[in-house]
Length: 220
Image 1 (cartoon, rainbow, N blue to C red):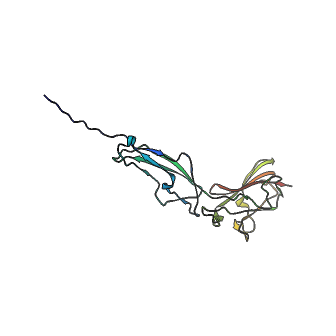
Image 2: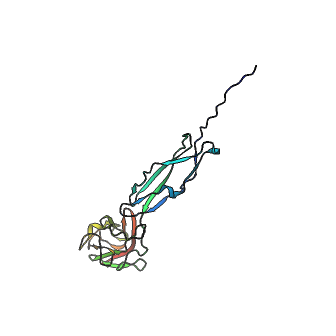
Image 3: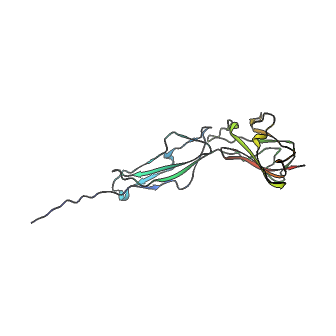
């Protein structure tokens, strides 16, 4: 007597990524709103095991066209799927949005190399630097309201201080663009603590991105 039975072969194995970002993806902001991620430019590819249930596809949780803010780091989660819906575990990469920072750093009277500039306590110290640029090379001239200047004492007495220098402006009392197209801020130092004699690091940043940093000394 002949006996027969049915064998059903099921594919339960998901597709997998054959190419995926292995490190931080860095984007330069297009404008003050940030940058838009082009997933298609990352070279992501997927494949089903032994090409059983092709075509394979992938999906990421980034909403196309969404602007990612300057200074932000965003985690993007992606999954691969085969043609019958078997889905892989999540694979992730991080996207960081930055600015093209000028190599000039601070301009005179500050100096970018030793011997660094010296300034009397109680004097006004001009801080000037060339604007960074956006992805297309356009100068970022609309950052003034978000610039932060911090001065940290590296050596000296009586103690080591860190000063939010934005709070010690003179003149316009805020960052502004001067006639030469440079960002400019005048720091009014004092003759008493926290303006101690010694070596200081002065750093301007936007959304955590350092745009210029150097050292100076405060003297009697």
